[in-house]
Amino acid sequence: MNIQKISTPDAPAAIGPYSQGYIAGDFLFASGQCGFDPATGATVEGGIAAQAERAIQNLGAVLSAGGADFDRVVKTTCFLADIGDFAAFNAVYEKYFTSKPARSCVAVKALPRGVLCEVEAIACLA
Image (cartoon, rainbow, N blue to C red; front, side, top):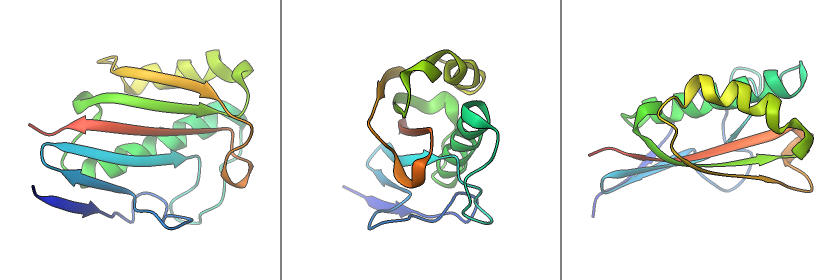
């Protein structure tokens, strides 16, 4: 099986011992993306909507670097620091994931560097 690491300057660099993503066979596995500005690494201002927008744009950059786009995504996992942000998060999410991939969305105790959301994805390349 062909396995290839994905790396792009259009998404924030990993802040730990992981990669932005991998292609394995016909699938692209994108690591969770948060609302970090790829140029500065700083968390974007503006609350959940702004962070969700940036996180999903970062995810889009990883997908693009691997030869995919949002329509190729078959599964997402979304992490929220506060489930009270569910509706505001969904308002942003639905603009990008118009194909409505399978999804899990959970509230977690905390996310890296105090961000409000994180989104990861699996895309089919075939």
